Image (cartoon, rainbow, N blue to C red; front, side, top):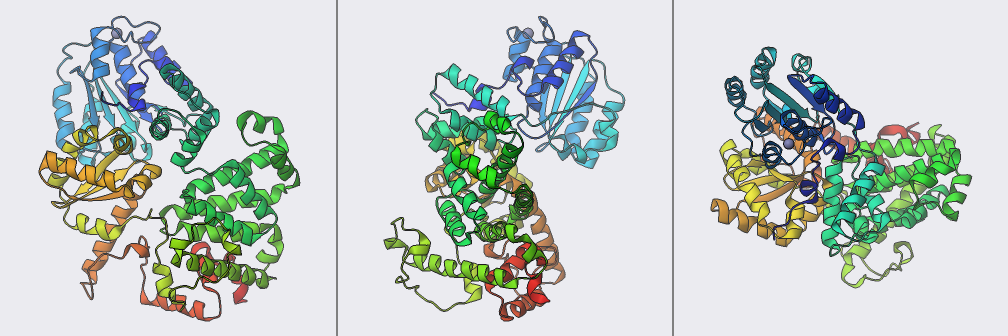
Length: 607
Ligand SMILES: [Zn+2]
């Protein structure tokens, strides 16, 4: 029996099933009831909020002979053919892969002909912002003189990239992120229908992690179920989403409140070593602090929304907390979350972050530059701790016990105790989530459209032939670049990306599958979708720079450890600066902090 992803099986088939967009569904139904159908619609909004589903339901509703109160019957031949994607008059186009002018010209020519079976011919153009300028012009011509009985539905996550001339010809609907409560109810409904057991807390974790996207929620739910033999447990939901348990969060937050930096750093290490995702941790923290604030203002609201977290400890913490400090902490967390997006060293960010928020209570002293000693002490605490951790890592084979890092005797000697800043930077962390640019760049160097088309053409078949667990990981991936010997595959979200890069079996299965379908096994490289755009841009800049400076030394791509290049690049000057700062007796960590956060921490030292 072939497994089908939840979000496919439970794709809404009528407006009533479309969760979280009541205004839009009501308006669309009224359009049908009153027969005031426009020629062009724009469905804009974040991914997974129901745009394509709404477009297909609308296509059915305008064509169904048995339409009732604006809803399609889903039983007639036309409805069923649209559901199955076999009705010739409803045409779905993915602009991400068909972005040529020719395709749109083709639409313009064919749109002239009347629909053959249905009343309306409906073109659904997904990711419409990906069209080329030429294609937009061709589309605009069609929209200016729309043929009778043709409806265009343009869907996009990035409406700001559309020409104003196109937008002005459409009736626009903005889909909003779906509320966690709505996502939760939909998951409950589905699980009850499927007769699957679940833990309420697990669904809350998933609903929160999905960030307003129903498709994401259902994919995570799928993944959680495949972990737990079709039972949805709290532990598996935490595992799959990379979330941190409430008690660990509480522990960390209390340490921060007590300004016990050392203990808080140990907690950070514990969390990272447990394989949690750094940005998810910050996300969880922000929401925890928001709940504390909220609890101070309106306790009943927290009780209602976050049934899991309110206990005596939480109440005490909320009572003691100073609202001003919490505002500042949340602001800091938000800033760092932004900066962290492209880092290859999330653990360093978390450490510096911890120092920063744990000292916000002392805010006066630090921001006025009065007490540089505090910073010095904290930085050397971090340094100490890092050395202990490094020692531990060297002796990892024996160090499986759970003795807290800070209390371990220092009898485990590092293999080479000499401190070399350069080597230290290049030291791999135990988290292998970094994107390997040295593998991606060579592929981009030789990438062709033809190779990409070949692999894209094989992708669906490939994914369908994987086993259930692997398929649920790969369902939402797509090849984004390919050469004749390599392919870059993007993952719609980070958690699956991180699982996939460590899954040797999966990588082999994909390689074998490709060999079977296209006759060879390309080198596979995975990237998170959210980083792809930037990697590609960086590559282009890198190319340009190298062409200009005409291979003075090596043209090899930068090493993965350097991270995506910044606009100014690593000039010898800035390197020299770094060393100067390091030599002026500032501990390495403070130097790092300056790099990460600018001067607001470290200014202190310079006056
Ligand atoms: Zn029907």
